[in-house]
Length: 98
Image 1 (cartoon, rainbow, N blue to C red):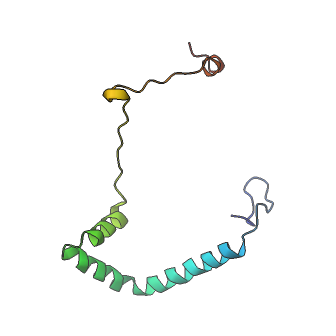
Image 2 (spheres, helix red, strand yellow):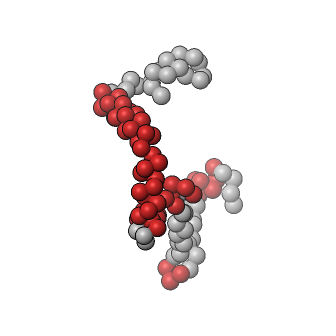
Image 3 (cartoon, rainbow, N blue to C red):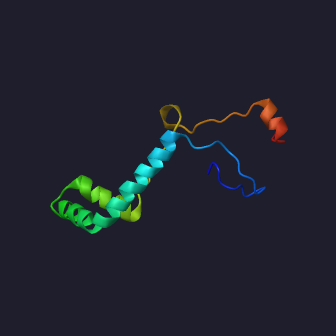
């Protein structure tokens, strides 16, 4: 977004893009353009691998089609008890919590 016009005041601002960033963006654009031409063949090859039981290929297809599944994490305190949260007096006073 550097060098772009700000939504707030209409002026250009921010840090200018470095050479590495510019080259990386150009590289990604070239790769995307090349992949766009060969997408049907790539998709067919990946699908064929998935149909033969290739789990990573199947996972890749599902992740791209429906997004990666969320991982749930349950947090508990010592011996499975609830985690105790204590507020400092300063925070409680500032937020008017008794």
